[in-house]
Length: 300
Image 1: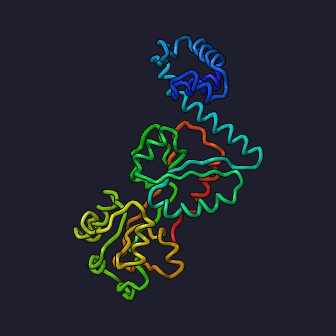
Image 2: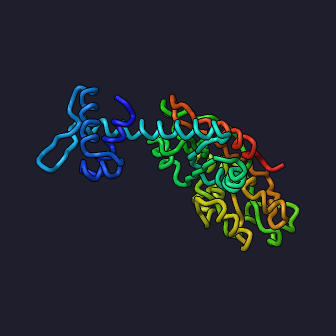
Image 3: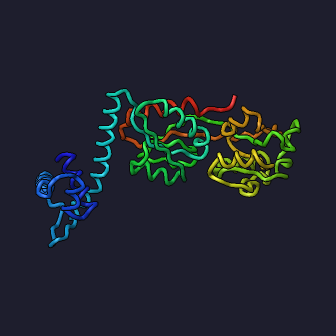
């Protein structure tokens, strides 16, 4: 069995026709037929039932097609990585980012990737549950997400990379920004903007400040996109509750300030680097992991 035989079977499964598959592969129908026959001989069973003018995958054929998609994709990635390494490139990465990591890493990653010849980057944002499915189906090479949202499993490598503190951030001209210290009651006089918070963080906040700190009640603007929340806070009297490092740009240019809440919020976000256990990582992923380590850090 070789990769070409599998590629030919996939083309046939996708088109449903020897003529269309042969045209797609730029080979003759007789060559395609011989390739399928060779595959069946290697497997010791039929992958295709030829019923009149129709072609239907056998149960064995369906199983082979399902497995072949991963094999052919991995082989293509390997060829690309080898080719790019030979010319000094780094290869391709396909990664998923949670809301917090996306706010911290997305733009720096895109900017940095443009300086590496041959680097190709694909970034996905979305619910952690969906990204795990994409990781398991090999659509993603790795994820950087809130560790509390990942359920441990034997097929996942979950590596804790960074713990970043949370706080309350407002625009520089917010009425509360002039106060030396701020109470939770002061904060609750304004809209509070946050991503969905874990049950663990909710319990911690209630333990520290009382029932009024329950995120289910105190958060009035809830969104998975941290960048959109921060942009809203910069233009309104809403107050951002989340990882303060996500507001780094506004902090640096003076448009945003962290409110000095008393007592100080003790919550932290713990971010994890998640990969599929037993899967050999592409060379480019070494670059990506180091990039995450270098950039996923707290404000000074």
